[in-house]
Length: 107
Ligand SMILES: [Zn+2]
Image (cartoon, rainbow, N blue to C red):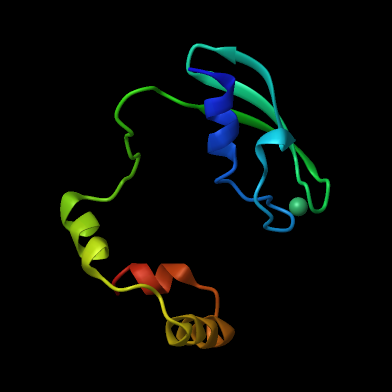
């Protein structure tokens, strides 16, 4: 796998500080050991540096999830979150007492 592949992949990642996408020239490959890459990146907008360790396997992409097949099917078929969904959650959390046990453990 070429260095340019991992640099191109990193352009799909956003800076955690400001949300700007990294450019290929913002990525330096520090080293690689089989599928494990060590990268140094800096944001082109806010110049925040970041060290990245990434496991990249060649071949068919795999998704790591703890969702069951039924749950994945359900979420694939559901629509995107709307502004109203966000507002509903905001209002819920605003009045939430912080006791998650009461939410998830039946009485
Ligand atoms: Zn940034």
